[in-house]
Length: 292
Image 1 (spheres, rainbow, N blue to C red):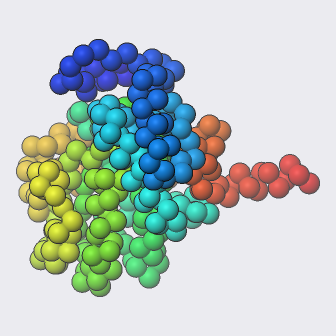
Image 2: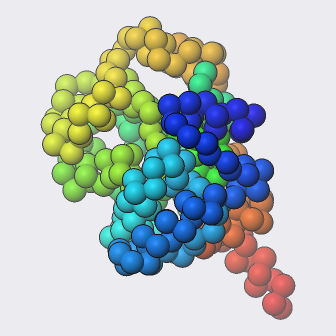
């Protein structure tokens, strides 16, 4: 199945491309060019350059090595400039955000096979969760999602439900925050966001969009769709078979707790997350018990 998805992704490319997808191997020529660019330019200090890791960036830019390397550099520079989103973040603490239905990752995908990341910002209490914690939860979700080869190839879809958003919440969405959001969605993370859907927005959203607009390029503007309360408009992009009931779909609401806990049980995935600076409280407890 992954081979079919990869083939479809490269129907617009000329020439031959041989990739051992089963072993996540990057063709030697691509890897050499990529590593030479990293060494010569010295723009970042990567913690990993193995095939599986580099493949995320190459897929994210359709194997155009120069663009993939720029994405790679942007990824690391974003991490260096925003260490509070990564260093020592406790996974268990982030589960609370999912319990309050602020951020949701449904267990199903849309009709194209893409993951859906859903924000319900009206549920966000800034006194309970800082804006940094919202970013932390976002980054851990993206880092988990990009472990799936399907997500590396197909990208994802993002929905923002603005229902119930207050002016008090809107004041936290400063130009600096807007810039970071766009960096994550466009320039600094290897999973491409193909569509961004805004639903249930009120006049307060107009103020927020004014803050974000200077950072949104023309290509990104083409991927943003405003639906208000018109769910039929949303259904023109996402089949209701792949949406929660509250958006005219068929599924119940889910939080991301089960999804994160599923990943957390895999030792390889725990290693991936810890190598990025994340901290798993349950693993630390187990380690201490073993040392006694």
